Image 1 (cartoon, rainbow, N blue to C red):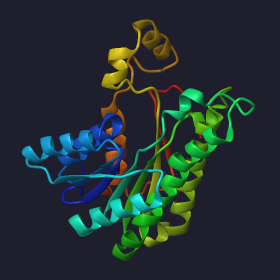
Image 2 (spheres, rainbow, N blue to C red):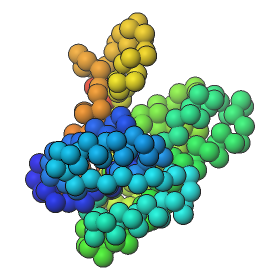
Image 3 (cartoon, helix red, strand yellow):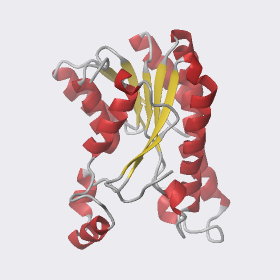
Image 4 (spheres, rainbow, N blue to C red):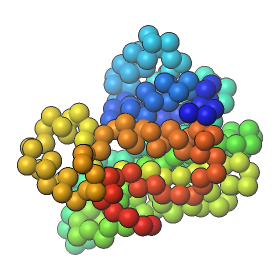
Length: 254
């Protein structure tokens, strides 16, 4: 992939799943990669594995719900790499989804936690990396959204609202700083069959999920990693403010 070689990219939520697949892909393309994750054991294990293969990878622990922790993460990455060419913000609080029922059922704590992690944490990440990128005169940011942002589901209103806000945030960054060399795009994954889901989900549910797709298979983390890596590379330098649905054709449109 064009000009990922020697780029420094921070992947937040990079210890497992889509984040880990993206870390691997970026390393394979020659990038130096920082892994930020609350799961520091998983992040360090991945970093150690890739370091043994000759990759320039470091892992740092941080909390997406705390601005000070986010600022410390970005400062550590900048100090280590000397620059940041890209950010992949791939963090969401998936625990709240289990209690994210509807507006009448949810208490305010569900909304506060969901928006704090999914939206405000992403805002803090962008605020932390933007000054260095603007000083460099270029930078690529990729955010993870969801089709829940536009689907109008009868449940998960807090999660859906947080992801709709991510889409809007992407367009704001692209509009405000695009002429100064900053690109901001969204990947919106469909159903991605991670190793954990594959091991624990009944086959009948997997079959049911596949019925809505216009693809012969489920998605995997590598599918999203490929899209995110393209958007972080100079091959994607004329893509800005876009929300890419990487979902096997489950849904279309904006």
